Length: 327
Image (cartoon, rainbow, N blue to C red; front, top):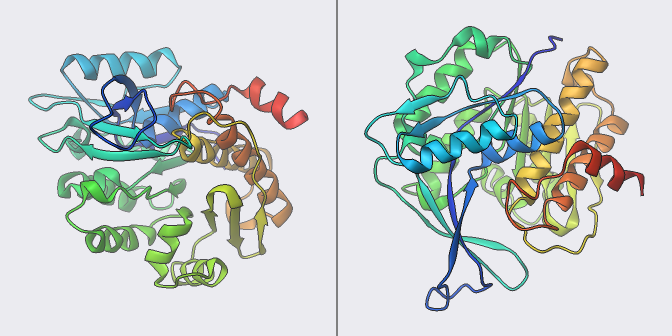
């Protein structure tokens, strides 16, 4: 396998996050701006763990776009292949937090936003082909223009690298959940590693209340190399051709759950990257013991991302992760 970089493609945005824990907008009076967007968060998580990572997304020319680009740069995320989008704004998300630290997205700005305005003809295809792993989500696929960009990228790099897909479904940006699920199903056909939440695997499979049956149906139907299901406090579940199993989560004193999912994904991708470059094997051949090791690490990154506020700032460094796992 090639020893190339990891490329994360998708949205970067501003999370306007309420400082007090309430789901009542009448009580949400003070907000702070934080960098966000799942692909950007995952890129930062990988960079903080020491992996070579590049983010490809659309940045607005407004003050927030400049701030976000500089922020990613400062965290060792390569943004040299991103695009500056004229006459488009930076997308904003409005985030409330319940008393347990669980975030609730109350809405996203929906006017013309830079994150969905990538131009395929301005993307360096050779740069994509030389990557070891390409990761993306479904957020920007809600827009037909960027949906087509993602499809063309997948079609034109089909056999060049490992594709990791975490739909990370946000119904608020789609016209309907049905449309989102249909697009997600069409996209899964192109990917090698699929990460779904327990709710998402129910939607994609049409099977409820049985994680293993739902996962088995999705894994077999789409000929995946690895399927990972996250289940919150119940940990994670995986299935591949060599086996299946559950991996227990870590219990930590959580402050905010914002970065947990993206932290998990950065740990998962980092583990896959190390495996393919150390073992020089395709991810399809990975043994159950190795998957369990990778998911234990991913669970640890996700847990550590909850002990401090903020999605990016809470993501652990490699040293912090190693010290935590050594306990």
